[in-house]
Image 1 (cartoon, rainbow, N blue to C red):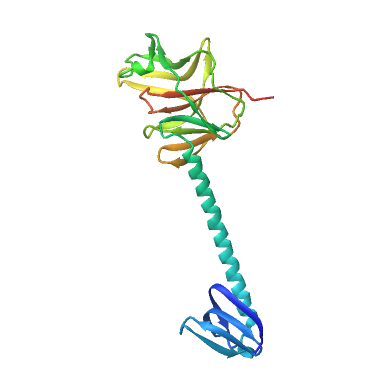
Image 2 (image 1 turned 60 degrees about the vertical axis):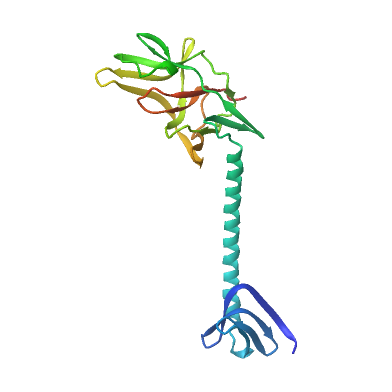
Length: 250
């Protein structure tokens, strides 16, 4: 007998009868006066008169099911693409601790600047401070030279920071004072040996890319000025300063 229609599905579907019952089938074929189907329950081909089958309901539900499968497959494909893109992005960043930025196909590193603590006792290079100075009063953490040599015209520049250990990090705004840049103000409490650090931090977005690796960027465009990506343990004066300047293009 000549077949009038054939339907085959990638997943099991319900073949509805007009009395409301149904058969779970792997596939079915609509012939001239009957429907031939492969029943999942008995794992064999069977037939039923066409006039007993509710084809409209069967096809409608099968169509909805197929659309749902396609939607899920598309979502999984998009998730896979996002994951692949992230892995590709991560592979471009060196595993050595530090701060990096990407331009086109090239990855660049920002070297940590030589920071120093300035108090009424004088100026001491940060790397030589062990432990923090026991003085009273105020001080500040500074970088020599009034301007950074790392200049960006993109006021929403993205950076990658590979941490050496779990510490605070972010973007700080620096203040130029004469021939130096102030990274943060310091208050020394000699009795408790506490050091209060007061960096001016910029609101940022942060996205963890891998263990110890984060991508960060400002929530709002940065105004022209001096900045730094910083990594530190609060109260320890161990801040690493990766300085840069923003000079938006015209």
